[in-house]
Length: 382
Ligand SMILES: Nc1ncnc2c1ncn2[C@@H]1O[C@H](COP(=O)(O)OP(=O)(O)O)[C@@H](O)[C@H]1O
Ligand SMILES: [Mg+2]
Image 1 (cartoon, rainbow, N blue to C red):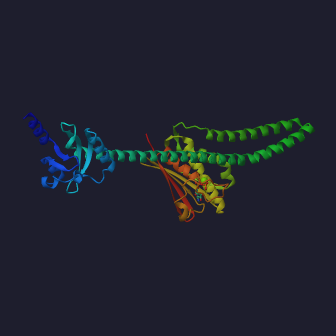
Image 2 (image 1 turned 180 degrees about the vertical axis):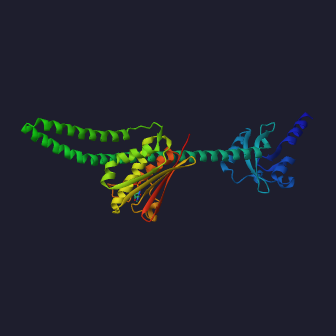
Image 3 (image 1 turned 180 degrees about the horizontal axis):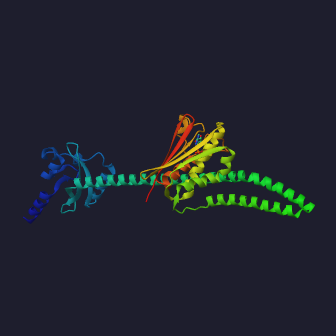
């Protein structure tokens, strides 16, 4: 009676089947029929492998039979195939039933449905995989971005070296003439000294001292400019422009370039030298274009005005213009139309970086006929 109650309890709450020693089904409960989709008639007498799923490898069954033939209980989560082709998962326990001689007479299998848990588990695994892939992609992105930053650092470094090179060329240019006059002065001093004209020697000596002082000032100006000074200050745009014009003073003079300005001064906050560098780049480019295009009347017009909180700087030259086929490329690093030793193609790239990154502004270009206008727009922050 008690046994009957147990049996009833188990059958009511589980999926139960029994097979003979050969695996032929001898009993199924209603739950088994429900989940497998077969009727009791179809199941009784059939081999238990009727619900076997083709995905399950052969060795699983070898193992199962090995365990139960040794009169042990086998427990596993099994993937099964229902009549309609759908898959269900059951947590299965197969127990051999022994007679009084300890011989196996039949097997009883008790299962419960774990399909929804398994599906959840698969979904979770899929999500985990997705996450892993996402992580991988992110890692790749970080590596790529790091590489980009490294490349940019190299470009900045090269740009700095290039502008230092240009500055050294400028110093050399500015020194050439005083060096010649010093040479001459020394020769004359020696001559007058031999003659014993102490007064003349004295006068010449004072003269040369002045020349040397000028040379030293030139050097100091350039050195100041290249000090790695990154301190942000409030500075006058007009001063920054004058600084660039003064550093290139001799070149501007020798190349007969006339710089006209119409400046409504304003104060900007940032590294003043960086803006000076932008003007130097623009002036140098105009100078190069004036020379290569053999322009005789060389004019640069610099206009600065304020529009609301934006400072608009127009840098205009009549140096021949920029053709439409290259104008899109001129801000790209390493783009140059100049000879290898004259251009690095970094001037405008650097200028753009300074306008955008350091001053939150922008630089654009417009060229018509033989004139070019570079427009720099910088926000004035209080
Ligand atoms: N004012 C200008 N007039 C004509 N062409 C210009 C001017 N400014 C720039 N360019 C063109 O843009 C190119 C890129 O300039 P830049 O970045 O300063 O590099 P680089 O001066 O080393 O060539 C120059 O090679 C030149 O062809
Ligand atoms: Mg340049």
